[in-house]
Length: 335
Image (cartoon, rainbow, N blue to C red; front, side, top):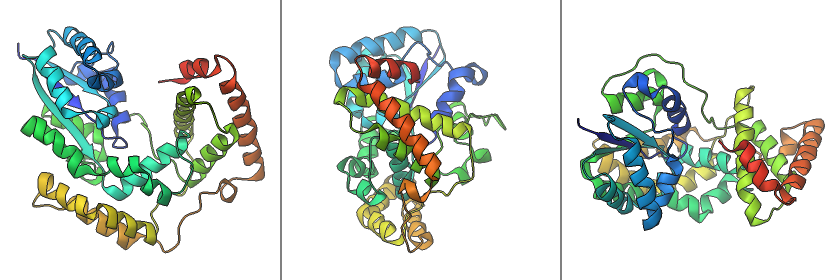
């Protein structure tokens, strides 16, 4: 029996949560094996350490033995060294055929979605302009170099797909991914909400909540991020009309200036003769409003809502600072 492994590499904010939600419960419907016993994030994170890499990837090899087609998925491959993954596959799964799939979101929407996620989980408290200047942001959105390393390590076994809902069957990244993996469009299907980008008012609520929590010791920060992600899931489950994030004219110009060369290089390497990444930067500038959006919670929430966010944030902050509190809350709400 031919055994195949498909590694879904993310990126962050490209529908990975929805893909993972469907595969976690329904992989068999599509002739796929989803190794529930494997922590897919740990598989990605283990690659940098030879001992951990050997342990976790050999465990994956045992779990997928006898399965014709296995899928693993973690956005955290974004931080992985492709050569480390190649080494893990050569050592632990030498007889397995491997394909790698990643999605890339154009620079403007990617920056706004990542900014919103970082604010939501309490990992960043600033403006989109300041987020653009964050070294981590600049590295993560320098796509040509990052995805070029995957192409160099895996050649045509690596596929980079544009994250464009208008081009997906039924507008669904889940259907697009399953079509790529199985060769057959599964058709209309119920897909969980996933991890949508919050609008301005919901983002203001998250920001007010984290302001009230205040500064935390370093060991408590992962629990804060867990609580922020859980807050996002609760917000998504109770949707309301909201104002989406957009880049104003000045920010759009800065994004184009910073990532224009990267967009052209990525287009040339992966999408030629089409130029979707450069085209997206042009649209960003054309559609940008003149004035920036406000991210001050007081501009989006009532006095009562601000007071409730402050009270709950203070309560949670007190719990996170107590002995064992961060570990307990992280365990309670971690996915």
